Image (cartoon, rainbow, N blue to C red; front, side):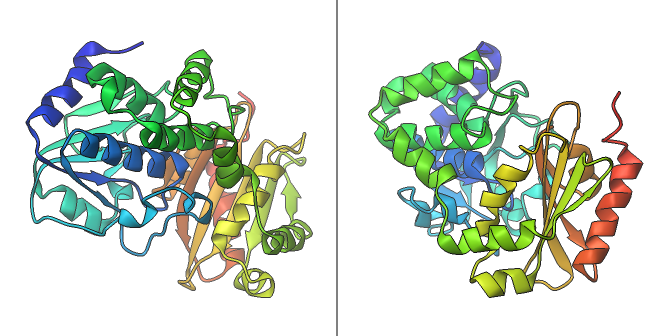
Length: 331
């Protein structure tokens, strides 16, 4: 259902803006990238000047590099914009320091998201927590404003965000409207098969080697409700892979019948910093753990970064936080 009053904010702000900056959260996922590129393309189709930004040091995930115009992030810049729009980011802390400063360089501001907002950017927020993805919200926004500016490219970006944030329509955030939006997007002639293959299914033989290597060291606890997978620098070096190749592992482990919470700890370029991805199912709210470390995400899919001297120390922090939050306690 469309909230006309809330959607009118988008119409009113975009109508008067000639220059628009678009921002997404650090470590962007498919919904975030898809939303940014879809909004950029829709706005440029309208004749607006739009520029997309990503926090320096954060890259587009490898599985999304098949998308057209993926190199436009940070490629152009103005000192000041009429309007700044943040997509798929419910916490100002997750925007990044450089992007947040750039976000402030605008006359007007807007946030479009489906996460619960922890640290607001602005009073003007289009927020739909029950939506499957930010791209689902954008499709409804675009149709509400003017559907003639939706083309095959816009639909490709929106469909990419939709299928990645729903795990190809298997996550609990999938509902009847999600399927309808997907069907409507297919009417624009997108290659949905290629999008799903590139964004979700395909991975390299090196990634397969990484998968075999780390799964053999999986640590189970809490009566097998919890599994922790660690990706060390040696793991990446031995298989000639990087963190982006870990996605093929993340998708599988949570499907183990007994597992309710899967934690993936990955080494980064900074020796004392570790990237953590969390997946859960049923009653387990993994975002409670991510938020403890100033991260964020969804009830069943979240992420954060941990400062620790070693991957073992990071693992102990995670275990302690699980106990503190009691997220594995069946209420």
